[in-house]
Length: 560
RNA sequence: GUGCCUGUAGCUCAGUGGAUAGAGCGUUGGACUCCGGAUCCAAAGGUCGCGGGUUCGACUCCCGCCAGGCACGCCA
Image 1 (spheres, rainbow, N blue to C red):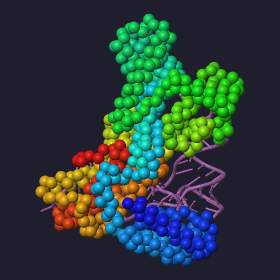
Image 2: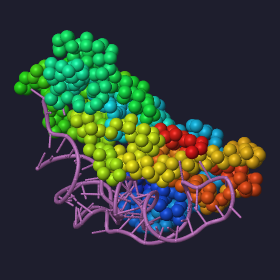
Image 3: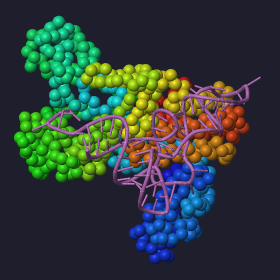
């Protein structure tokens, strides 16, 4: 709704500017694209533009005088824009007609679950790949943050009109899996008191879960593997561990409300020969060369600081080789935009991946990489030290169990993803009453309870879509209407900037505006026409809260 | 040493080149016998790390410092 008015004003501005430029003999191609912004101070209108100042600096002139000329030419429908004026150094401020804000209520009630849906994506295909943790151990908190961000971003893009697929890349090839298999096997032998026959690898995985896996194998197979030569038993231990850990990961993610459309195996790239095909592809284009017995990818030709090895001198492809093959595969599946969500410690990898994308003949912008900064987990203000190798870490599952899915997801999303995040478990629990997630959920529960109450009191509620909203004129009502009407715009920003954290911030503002309104004005006890208008407003707020909470994977309870 | 991220209220963090920089927590003081007090209202709290530059206008863009984090492999 607000977006429509915005478009209206922008068009009118464009017309006025062109007409002015013709009169002045300005070069039309130099005309700036008009922009509207929401002034911080409400006295400065609902939207404001700075075009007069921009024009003044391009063509030299007095900004206020230019603003005056533009304003004289501005053709805007009176029912949309109540008034506009020139202010400050040359801003043009627009004030909307309140009735238009009320329109948003009707729109929300009418569209319900689809309210807020946009078509920014125009049906383009996007893949969001996230978490993608090695199946060598349970997910920890950092993965949780990535999961929350990736899943929410995917939902937001979907709502913004993209066709989205969620994918998990399983690093089930390579040395790490061997080490995992050996770790489990060593523990298995230990259980029989024969640890010295299958020594624990130097850089093995030391977590308790490795013992659990070994015990499982002991229960299933007994001492069957004790007599099998180590080289023959390794594939079994490796694949058993991988599968079981992956099952655990899937369950943890499901408990966290995250589902994937595709689980993509790195090993499958090797098995189907795609890694080799990709290397051949790069060879055919002359993007690789041999040096020191290894095969190098000319990533420096595409902006990387140096070239990178894709096939080692021992003949084994590097991780980069399979990663290029993986991205080639992604593009072959027809995605217009590929989004990778990585831990921030992989940031040095970006230039070579962007280089690879270009070597594949794609625009580097078609690959978007979001970095997730580290999470510092605290307990009562003290950092909890974590090390995957040493097996000392708090898992995602433990955090979800301790503070709850909703609180955990909200925590992860209330910061932009490239900021460090401090997550204090004690604080998250102890302050449940003041936790922002409850503030938003509480607003939703209150709204639901309002309608419960109405029913209990025998108050009949007409079709709220048909109700007159004219009685809404209190400041808190107008303010709430305004915040409500920003929903689409906020979603649009979250979509365009790949910024899920905008959603919780908006929700907090919306819930706040609702609480203020609710606290100040009686609803059920008001005269029928006022009551109905306020119920319609409340219902619309409830719809937006529910829709947007679902975008970030947080539940919207009807009572708490 | 080189590159990337971060630096905003006591703490945790928002802030699409615009007008008087915001929120939560914490602190202080208040709120209807009535729809949910997990709420509301108000107050106090700032050299936006420092210094230059671009601009009509900079927390925002550029350069140089300072501090913290991370990465710099024929590991993944």
